Structures are given as C-alpha cells and as structure tokens.
Length: 370
View 1 (cartoon, rainbow, N blue to C red):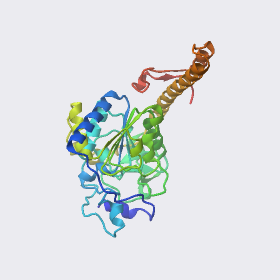
View 2 (tube, one colour):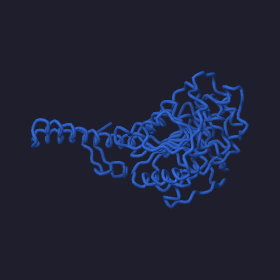
View 3 (cartoon, rainbow, N blue to C red):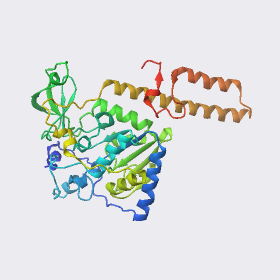
View 4 (cartoon, rainbow, N blue to C red):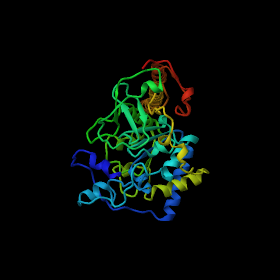
C-alpha cells in the first residue's frame, strides 16, 4: 500500500505545516482564472510545471499535508482510509494532460516531488522531467549511475540495495558490475544531481512556472518556481491550501487540479488522452530493461541555454542602469555608455534568437567554453 512509503521513512519531526483548511474559489472565478492561465500558456515560450502530491489524490494516493493527508493524520495517531497500491494506481487526468502538453510543446518541462511513478506511466519522456525525490518504478546503479524502469513498485525506501546487479550490459556495450538501489530519498538524503540541476535551469529560464497540488514547503524543490521571478517570469499556483509562496504568485487558483486542467485544456483546444496500459513502460514485456537516465548532452545543452538567457537579462539590467545614470547627469546619451553595453555583449560571444532565447534550442550557438 502507498502509505507503506511513509512508514519506511526514518523518523523526522519537522514535517511542515499540516492540516490547514482548504479554500475553494467560486465556479465563476475558477472559469475566469483557468482561461487566464491558458492565455498565459499560449503567450509563453518556456512553461515549467511543478507537481506535488495533490495531483495524485484522484488516483487514490493520499497527499501529505491536506486535511486527510498522511502527516496530518499521523499527528492524530491515524492513517488515511483511502489508500491504493502504487501498482494499482493509474495516471490521473492531470498526469495525462501534462504528457499531452509536453508532447505538443506547450509545456517544456515537469519538476516533480512525487515518487508514485505516475508521470513516467503517463508516457512522459525522461528528458522532460526531473524527479527530485525519486520514483517507485525506477532503480539506480551505484556504479554507472544509470537508471532503469521496473515492472512493479519497489518496496524499498532510502536508496537501499535491491540485491540485483546492473543490467547495463544488456542495454549497451558498456558493461557494468554495479549493484541496483531504489531511487527513493529519505528525509535528509541529497537530491539527485542531474535532476536538480535540470530543474534549476528550466525553472530559471521559464517565463511561466505553474505549481500544481503542492504547498511548496519542502526545500529546495519548493523554491525552484521562484527562480525566474528576477528575470520577469510569472508564477501561477493551483492548490486547495495556502502555499508558502502565495504572496509572490501572479495567479492563485483554489480548486481541484483536475478541474482546472480540464478547463485549461479545453481553452487550448486539446483533448486529454486516456491512460492506455499498453503504452505504460512499466507494463513492458520486453526482456531488455528500459533505461530511464539523463544523457549528459541534455544537461550540457540546458547549461548553454541557461547561460544565454541569464546573460541577456544581465545585459538588459546593465542598459537600464546606464540609462538611468546618464539621465541623472546628462539627458543626451553618451558614446561611453553605448560602448559599455557593447563591451558586455562581447564577453559572452553568444549568438541567440534575441527576441526569445528559449524558443528553439537548436538555434542557440555559443562559442564560449563552460
């Protein structure tokens, strides 16, 4: 049962604020805000979605800090009475809609705190998601660091050995004698490096970060949606409870996530695909294990894109600063201030699509070595 995951974690007292009452916007407000969110998605070039336990409750998996969440009931000496096994749960409308939004290019990336594997099972590709806290349906080799998809949910928690050798020699010519471990983090385990850095890069360059079903209390994942604020990015939150960063949000929708996603998809003219077991990689009958690893080239490409993006905004900030200084001393712009901006441009020696550096990764060319 999915509550066994919580039981397998080590003892930890500081589990954040739990049991805060839920709030519900009126149906009219939900309609209005959902249309606005769809409009922002249409107008954005790099949308990143951050998902928490609230997107899986409709699959029968309890959340943690809601009125009937695992940690909320734990304080009362109780356990959730709705609890389905990870193997029996299937992706929700939100999971399937997000997979469709990634497929159509409306969403560039997913950052998830969830360990239930429902994003993977929805058909979302590995290059489109960071799983910051692990995945019940993946296992990691301690030697080559590659990850592989499991056919059933692990019963192990805390990156413990699974008693099996790495199947690396079956999936590539690069043999490996390493041992497999589960990927589920315990409370104070370090987050996986590649997943965290990819989440950082994508969240920073996003012109729209959308948070679904999370109170944003766990760090660093809860702070990632704020990274783009200094570059002019928007922040939208869909959650029934107040979140840690409500004051910094540009839009808050207090409603069930599935309901909001259905309305957004309708506004975008997209259908939500049904879950099909045959397309679920955990149901594969192939004898060769399916790999679930980041390629190093993906991380390097995102580093280049992130560098181009941040340098552009540093240039804009410098221009504004010089313009203000010039206006304070001389209403006519000087040649010196113009040369300062040009000198800054030559430092990075990067060519990009100036109006939108995140539009097309293939069009970004950078000669600087990182």
